[in-house]
View 1 (cartoon, one colour):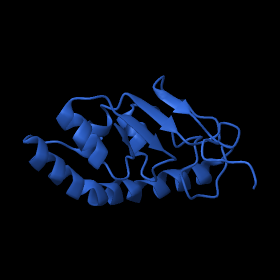
View 2 (cartoon, rainbow, N blue to C red):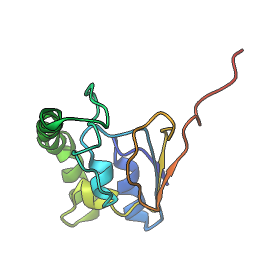
View 3 (cartoon, rainbow, N blue to C red):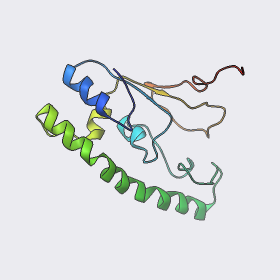
View 4 (cartoon, one colour):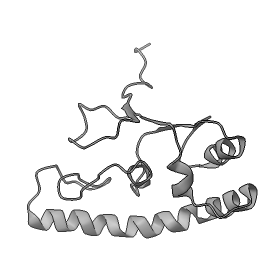
Amino acid sequence: VFTDPLLPCGQIVAEYLSVPSVVFLQQMPCDLDFEATQCPNPSSYIPRVFTDLTDHMNFFQRVKNVLFGLPNYFLCDVVFEPYSQLASEFLQRNVTVLSLLSKASIWLLKIDFVLQYPRPLMPNMVLIGGVNCAPKK
């Protein structure tokens, strides 16, 4: 099942049918994708989404990077709570979106390694940048 983690209904269906799932995404603002894959995502040198920081940060920029990421975790909990309730009701057991996403077989990330800052990736994370690009008409 191809699914997008921002709308995790596909992941719920894959879990219900006991079939493998493939996650296809750009990047999640709350870093739930890296948490689900257990991929290191250190704030010390990886700038958070929507910040103007680079991978070369001084101490205060690193603190800003950490503080900028904190509200995203709480926002992510609020946004995905209805999906957790839906999954728990549908699968007849207590389930979180994080536990559903952690069962994905492979993560296809629509980012190009040339345009991103250096970061660790897990073996099941594949960069497929430019997959949506087409020649000029």
